[in-house]
Image (cartoon, rainbow over all chains, first blue to last red; front, side, top):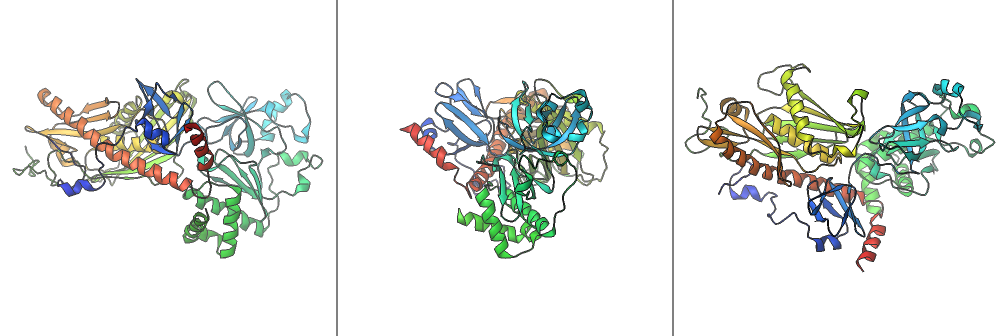
Length: 308
Length: 261
């Protein structure tokens, strides 16, 4: 019989490298039941379709449920899903997202939110400056670019889905709206877990908005006095002008951004406590902010992992 | 044959010291390139290809959107320094466009495009070194990059070239061999046992076809094993680092245990 070897040595020792015995593949069902997180890749048979229902990341061919993405197999009762390890953001209603305006269209904005399609923000789902409650008129339609322009960053909530799966956003809360005074960091969406609050204030004078789509906004802290209903400033909501940010805050912002980048590079999920600990560790080390992207970053990851 | 180099010498070795059915060394590197959703550098011997996948994302132009499935956009660039003879190719080069459309049609049955209506999946292929097996390297690289980007596939697509020298078939040809002997390229899906591409640019005797085709399909399964190992290694390393700094397993483990009782 012929033999195939994909390495340069045709002799036996060449194929010991990492060739597994041919028994592999079929996770038998008993094994599947007991395992916590089973890994799979596209085309692998997970289980039989008679006993289980197929969920996301799987498809059915004849009698089998087969994985279509590389990731972890998860099971809830009879439902089998495969969660892809790295993928685009899958929106759910109520999620907090950070996005960037890509297009202004009649009565709507298109927003890039790291999803499979651009999200849509309807003119009817934004707050008017000054907080007046009324129907949007033609005059509002004509001055849409005074609210949001192409390239503006905003924080919003997923409101609903259209029939083709595109998400509709809304900013009808004082928490949401245009973003200023900071910097955007992009991480894989799986690293942002659902938290009680996605607005985090770090004690170092930095505010964080962890968008569930993997867009993270790191900005100067807003004083509590500016946020109350009375302090709602008509001009400020849609303003394009940054406030004065002093040097200490700028340093803190870039330090936090670099921490996030380093943790994301090492695929470590971000939580408020983790970020806080990481920041404290960085302050203790007294290094330069930019060093974090080099060796200091490795040390940071080691410190954080040893804790967990 | 007119060549001074023997394609297959009396000892049964080819010009680079391989046996007839021996494949070249495959190495796969999943390091991320820039903002790509998935990217991979794959070596087949001296052939080196870099593939970056973006998407599924909003289609760039309205004309390219398909209302019920995703559009696949493939762009290939052959670096001027990649071949033995330095040559700058324009973007509109007919051969490159043909290569791109071949890759596109190879992946259309493999990607579950119906899950992403009105979206676009961009595949950018850079050829950094070229020593035969251009199309198979592009296809294998694209499969891996798509898997890395978490795009749902029915199965891996594994491709390989096969040729025949007088009466002896051989696999995974180098440039030197491709120039000299008739060959075919086969892309197959090993688990579902479907073939998505068979192509040839040279004339091949019809009696030889079946033999080479069978060999190529068998070799595809060997390549599949390599690719699967690479994907699994990456997945498990990412999963293990996900576990750092949080306890996400707790609640899920609980659910599982409740179930089992």
